[in-house]
Figure (cartoon, rainbow, N blue to C red):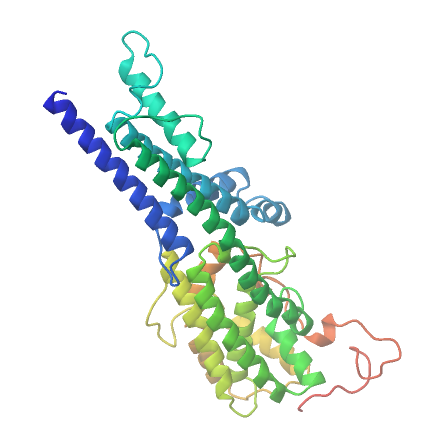
Length: 390
């Protein structure tokens, strides 16, 4: 064999081995590593598939139509990424088979087409070995070891994805439990105004302490699962109008309102809930490369205007919730809380393609959204005195 041809075959073998090793590293980082590890190679099929969806169903289309299509995005992308890994492994091994001459002794090459014949046979041998079909073999030195190793890697990739699915759906179910329960307390899309007025009427605002505690734990779990299982943020809720992103924003807004404008004893658990929330959203932004201000100032502008805040205060006050008298300071305090998670929340909302949040709807209290209960004095909007703190 001429030295130049030998050098070319060595280079091709090394490149094929490097491609296989890099592909398996990406699979390990995506499926096995118990921490957030953003693998650029594995993100390519997700980006391409997302681009195809955005092209076919752009944001200008009605949301119900987009939601029906987007519901298939994450599950289908998982299958696509498995095929993507298998194809990369097959290409890498085909390069190694060609480099050792594993395809040269298979069949009779056509006149003048020996090189193309060897390449095609190397690809055929790689596909047969990867899928353990066994319809192709080679007696070239080292070919048997490569065939066995490729078959093992193909089985490992498929087994890893199969074992990965129960973990995803278990984390998804735990996430959606509180999202669904929030609808009972805050309507759909979840509104902190509805939640505060409903608690004020039915339980008293002191009962919010348990909500802050449960959602602090929820935020901690979301931070862990949505970075170690990077496909999970893209899984949509069972119903189009529900979203884990909107639920997270509503809870943090409710905690920010109680700490800024609602006249009630300070509950440090509300502070911890907000902090757990914006830290979780920021970690997810860091993983997906979404920009946000890391050290915002209390008076930095957010997506919420002062007029919108005053509208919230008017609705709460009309519903009988006791508010602080200094609205200027209350607005500054609310903005000081909101600025910590505003950009991160909007960035994650775009990533998850969440439905419109409660800020995009007319603001109403639970007294308006609840339907009257026949025979239940004091339980409907017109049913007697409400259990308010005023």
